[in-house]
Length: 635
Ligand SMILES: *[C@@H]1O[C@H](CO)[C@@H](O)[C@H](O)[C@H]1NC(C)=O
Ligand SMILES: *[C@@H]1O[C@H](CO)[C@@H](O)[C@H](O)[C@H]1NC(C)=O
Ligand SMILES: *[C@@H]1O[C@H](CO)[C@@H](O)[C@H](O)[C@H]1NC(C)=O
Ligand SMILES: *[C@@H]1O[C@H](CO)[C@@H](O)[C@H](O)[C@H]1NC(C)=O
Image (cartoon, rainbow, N blue to C red):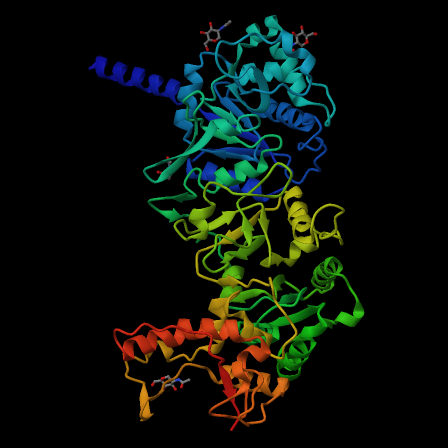
């Protein structure tokens, strides 16, 4: 009877050795977006986390540039003194820019395989003192230098390692650990090694080309292609915050091919009880087509108008009439309206800072919704959807029809301008659907007002000597560690081209058939046009005359008004200097399309919308639209 008991006991010990108690310790003085991302990945793998320094003021220096981090060592030293069970294995790790890519089990297995009592993450770049390079042991393969952003070790060894710490909070933790490591005696007695080949820790600084995403059965890892390893922990150290944001859009299971987005339905804000108050900032900064349509859409936005305040900034005298007619008819519906007109000569950068400040100072304001006038918000629920998403800064993805152009950037170039991320095209074309952490959004986005009163309380977020206002804003948001997201969970709309927009006509939108064909068609082509063949809507009132819906009422009105505005109706006689030969056989009182410079557009319209009909009515005949002088007749 004794033997089975003994067997059982030894089996338990074996387990205890394989799975000793792991304690993850991190320092987080603030609950940043990055910290929340870290916690989510930790929770996914059931890591137990001890957070130090909560609510304490961060005095460990600016980790983006200068050395620092002594505060972390001080807090760790104090915390380790309180832990009683000596068999603990301690993982000390940064958290604002870290995600777990695998389980505690794999971490412990790899730690054990490293055959040392303390294992530090490694880096290819030496920091902060490059003069120490010669003192580092040589390595045959892998990174040579120590990174203090992550290490794992047995409690007594870690405790011993930091026992001599007396540094200040802004002293360099990395230098402190480096000096221990490069001292052969201390390295040996504490039994420290580096994770040279990134089996446990992947520091991204200096290694961007080595790391790719690896998708496998409903989870995503980082793969180091240089050393062919799958690190357990990924750390966006130094200036690689955007890369960890990119990787964090996938790792460990944020988005996978099998599940799609797994975070998009988490932590939503319910709109069932009350609607938060939103200040909508509308910005008209250049002559823009379809401004009246923009305001028609704004009116149709699904949100209680008594919970909306409007701020309309208009820099263009050309659009004043459209703004004032909208406000005259509907301004009263909104809780408040404020406008800045062209006469006030506020520049566009100042207008954006001004608008933020309106919300910031207004105790009622819960959100700021930025809406540039060139945005075509087709989805009437956009505002509600964005609020429900409950994110610090979130933009609905909008694109330019038929182009890869959108209102977000997936990556930044080294000098801070646009760069294409590997997943950009898949996101824009909707092959990957989710809510994406990105470095730049513009044109339409929602900001939590609480941020404007805390981290984003600077009153000149859009001002910069070198960057345009949108880039300056995004730069400021990023530098505060606030995450910006773009959602393509739904179809939200598109963005107009404002190029080549002429304002010399009465109804300039009529000329947009080339530049913004989709919007032109929506505005000017009859809703039943596409059904005329199927539903036999073509009437034949008299021989050779066909009658069918093609223009909207607005199109007819605009065409007529445009001609009346031009006003140079022909005399209606046979003499007509506008045509070759100067003789008109069948005179009418009319204006030729080319007189108002509408002939190219009209030709395009005939080819696009009339030719397909005539070709169906007269099969076998090909429609040619010649140079005939198309005319609007006056009756
Ligand atoms: C984490 O713990 C929960 C509950 O104890 C368990 O259902 C889940 O499978 C665990 N997840 C992992 C990755 O071990
Ligand atoms: C370091 O620790 C491992 C076991 O964790 C041991 O095998 C090895 O001999 C130690 N090295 C030194 C130099 O003490
Ligand atoms: C701590 O300081 C003592 C005395 O200077 C030294 O002997 C010891 O090696 C140091 N330990 C570590 C881990 O640095
Ligand atoms: C389009 O056709 C439908 C169904 O015949 C009709 O009810 C509707 O009024 C038409 N639309 C317009 C703008 O005439």
